[in-house]
Image 1 (cartoon, rainbow, N blue to C red):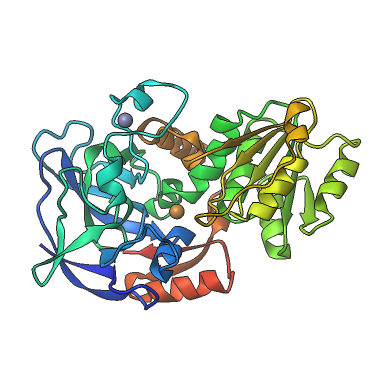
Image 2 (cartoon, rainbow, N blue to C red):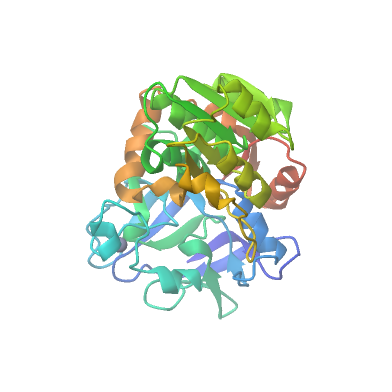
Length: 367
Ligand code: CU
Ligand code: ZN
C-alpha cells in the first residue's frame, strides 16, 4: 500500500514527507494505523548524522500509538482493532533476558533492529523500488507501520492515543527509572537532574513511589515549574555549585536516590556525587554521546554509593507499558502538561526546530 511518511534521505537535511510503499505484514508482523507520535531527541540525533550507528534512508519516529489494522500469519499477541503503543524495546517473552526479572533488554531481534531491518532481515518500506530501513524497529513518522508483534504493547482502548504515545519512550523511561530500576522507597529523598520528559517522568515516578522529598535540577524555569506540577518539592538551578547545595540540603549526606536525565557526562558525575553515602543509588537514564566516559572518584563507591543504568526505565514493554497507561487512566499521572505542541506529519521538521530551541517538552504529530 501507499502511505505518507517522513523520510530521512540524507543526514543533516530536513526530513522529506512523501508517499512511500509499505508491504503487507509477514508472519508474526502487524500492520498498525498510527494516530499519534511524539518527537524525541533520538529522532533528531539520528537525523543530524552525529550518531555513528545511524543509517539512511529510513523512516524516523519511535513514539507511536495507533490501532491494529491487520495481523500477519501466526500473530497471537494482538488482534485487529486493538489499541497499541509501539516498543523500540520489545519483549519476546522467551529469550534468556525476557525470562529473567532482572532486565528488560530482550535479545530476540536486537541485531536486525539495530541495522534497520525487521526480524527476517528485510524491510517492508520502499521508495521507487529501493528499500527504506525501519528506524528503531518502529518508523512511526508515518500513517501506517509494520512491526513485529513482540514490539507492540496493547493498551486500554479508552486511553487517548495522542497521550498514550508518550508512553512509547520518554515518559515511560522516566517513570520506570524510579518505579522499576531504582524502586524508590517510601519516605525517601530523590534528586532528578534534567526536567525534560524523562526527568519529569522520574519526578512523577518518585512521587508515585511515595518519596517525601523530590528535588529537580534544571536550567530553565518553565521546565522546573512543570516538575513542580509532577510532584517536585524543591526546584534547583543547575550549575557547578549544585552538588554542594544538595549536600547542604540533606544534612551533608546527599540523596537516597539520584536520577540523571540529561545525557551529559558532567551531570552524570554530579548525580553520583549527590547520592548519599552508605546507600545512595544513582540511576543514569540519559544517553551520552558515543566515546564519552563517566568520571567518578572510586572512594565514592566504596563508601556505599551505587551507580546503575536504566534503558527504557527497565520496563518490560508488553507487560509494564499497559500498566502505566492504566495508572494514567486512573488519574495517577498527569500527561497533558507534557504536550507543548500538536503538529501534522508535514510539520515534522518544525518539531525538530522547536526541540532545538528548547521550546516545550514534547511535540506530538497527529497522523
Ligand atoms: Cu525516544
Ligand atoms: Zn526477549
